[in-house]
Amino acid sequence: MHNKKKKKSYEHYTTDAYAQDIIALLQRYKSEDTVLICHSYGCGVATHLYSCLEASDNPLYHSIKAIVMIGPKALVTPHEANGKQKLAKTPDWAIDFARKLDRWAGFTPNQSTGCYTPAQGMI
Picture 1 (cartoon, rainbow, N blue to C red):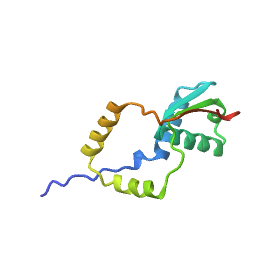
Picture 2 (cartoon, rainbow, N blue to C red; picture 1 turned 180 degrees about the vertical axis):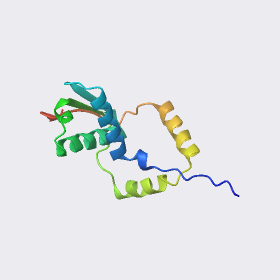
Picture 3 (cartoon, rainbow, N blue to C red; picture 1 turned 90 degrees about the vertical axis):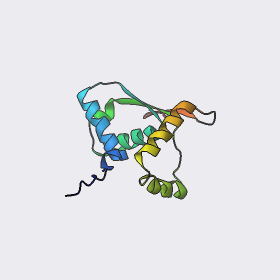
Picture 4 (cartoon, rainbow, N blue to C red; picture 1 turned 45 degrees about the vertical axis):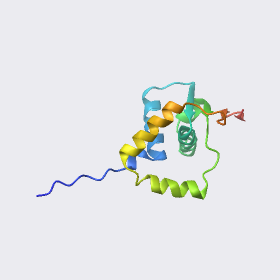
């Protein structure tokens, strides 16, 4: 009998899965004045979360007073979409190493910051 490695499932690492996790946290720790602070990919997760709450008429939608976006991604190009498919095939050790390198580098001067409030839009 051979001991086969189980293939990792990435279904819990999708934008929707992250948004649903945050919704579960917001439901558990209720607040009338929630401010989401997000960076990079988290900006996409926050906007997806906000649109999901709006579409489902979830009461949490009205509790989010602002979304602070640090270094949001403006547009995903076809080249980046292709890279995302390749990334799914990258070994975990390589991803972990790249994350460590990214954390050592810190913020870069070309990153932008913004604050999105539902009433005012991007400021």
